[in-house]
Amino acid sequence: MSAQTESPEGLDIAALQKFLETKAAGVDGPLHAELLHGGRSNLTYRVTDGTSTWVVRRPPLGGLTPSAHDMGREFRIVAALRDSGVPVAGTVAPCEDASVIGAPFSVVEHVPGRVIRTQAELHSLSPADITRCGAALIDVLARLHGVDYRAVGLEGFGRPEGYLPRQVQRWRDQWERVSTRPLTDLDTLHARLAAAVPAESGASIVHGDYRIDNAILDPADPAEIRALVDWEMATLGDPLADLGLHLVYRDPAFDPVLGGSAASTSHRLPDVRDLAEHYARLTGHDLAQLGFYLGLGYFKIAVIAEGIHARHQQGLTVGDGFETVGQAVPLLAASGLRAMNGKGML
Image (cartoon, rainbow, N blue to C red; front, side, top):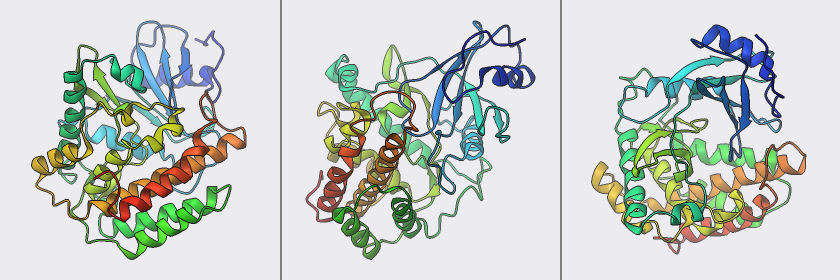
């Protein structure tokens, strides 16, 4: 049966209807779709037939780079983690055929719950619940890093050896592709990182974009995480890179990327030092080189923000709130240098 609603930008709902009728059990009627709030990279839609609800993810409309926005990889890791103890959505089907809706995409089950994106949303919680939520995010991150990736079928999903130098070079290469302006601090930060790569702390699954608004929380208990989402940058690598990035998201320099007042930057969340120490207690990791991992996190976010800014300038973003993203890039680069100098958040 054909869909009877207009397709949101980036999604051919009639073609998706035909796809889901062959891949999902019990599609009961015409599909209705809406673009979910957020999604500064992959586009994310809630799709329903009035009875069942799914989430569809596809790459952005433009600005694709080698290995970026790999929907097959994202689907594979979510499927692998289903019974691991790490909360993820149930998988439905991947589609690598770009001719179906205009790009590869994946479909997973919709997980009902609360996503906290803004400080206003976070501050509606009690101080105790905010503290518990911040600690729970570290608990789940440690749980993810404790998964035996071989046991869940992810051997070969990435190359843990040499992960850190590859990350430094990868994000430098990405900067060359997306940059809209020269930025001395970014160049200096890259040089500092390249000269200071430590021995890797270990090898695990890394989420690659771990922050509070990439978690679906239980509406009644914000310390219960129902699902982690946005796995597009997941791979195998050094787990401290995930921790460093998660802590970097606490910096107000990140605010313009999400249009201001990002939940992750709230001063009401647990102190960065407390979060780092909590992670160390859970995992046994030595955090002596954490300054490098913070610098790498700042470098990565700055480059990603520049890519979003470039797509917005080209008219290739979907949704609102992109006007301020470019303002974050110099702030993040400068913060990265401070972190490398030991003058950052810790």
